[in-house]
Amino acid sequence: MRPLREEDIHGVSTVRVKGWQAAYPGMVPQSYLDALTVAQDARRRRDMFERASDTVLNLVAEENGTVVGWAALGPSREDDRRPHDGELLALYASPDRLGTGIGRALMRRTLTAAQERSFRRLVLWVLAANTRARRFYEHAGFLPDGATSDWPVDGVMVPEVRYSRDVPPLR
Image (tube, rainbow, N blue to C red; front, top):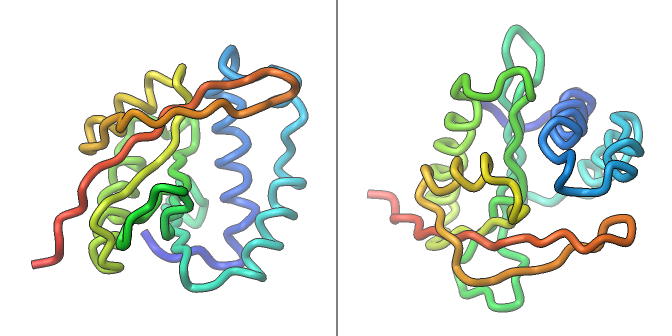
């Protein structure tokens, strides 16, 4: 696990786009998934990387020089945030590496980073229909906190659920 470098952007975009295309059929419109491209995502991600401040931590997991996972952690963007609330903005493992521990390793490192940043609570959003991800987050101590949202995708409202968990202080 290490911080994202500019040369990792294409690999992160590959993990993200392939992850969406593998995980979300039937949950979001197929037209949206079919339109996703690694090149387009990498351009957007590169722009974000160039404008990035140190408030968002992007971590990558790699095997033999290939990015196989990515996580992003930053301050909560929620309207009801409290001081010291953080947000798990993203956590992805390559579809062919699911179940190998990459996601769990990224989660452990992200939780440690949350402690180092003095976050006391973390939130995240997950598609309501994504039972695999919801089980993963619940195993990591996150629980639905009652907040929901509908995300408009190609004319379809896709329900999301917010999860949260406390982050114990560093000892």
